[in-house]
Image (cartoon, rainbow, N blue to C red; front, side):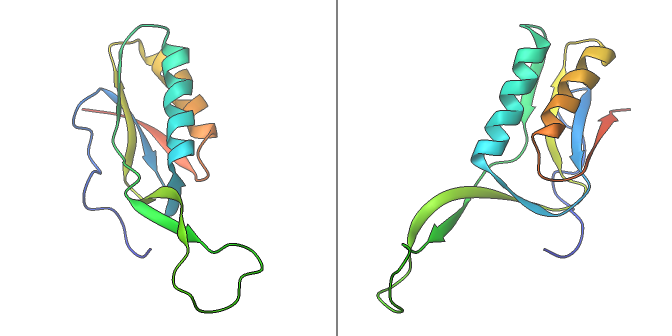
Length: 119
């Protein structure tokens, strides 16, 4: 993945956001783990938006299979993320709570990220 993200690189819905700084494939499980961590930390307060969607299937061939006989079956789904892409947005909570919740979600991601505030 070359280049930076020209789409989805601005805060649109919330006040606080988590922005990717490196290119990566982020799996649906990683996205869900980050969302759960943010929801649990916010404790019924605020609203969370997930700005990425895993729309690329990753296929895997069974082990010890000979060459040929077509492509493998889809094993899992990934979201292709470029630097600058917003991963999550959050609003309706204080900045210190948002910072803590987003930092926990950032620890679930396989890439370096940064916390940003709109405005």
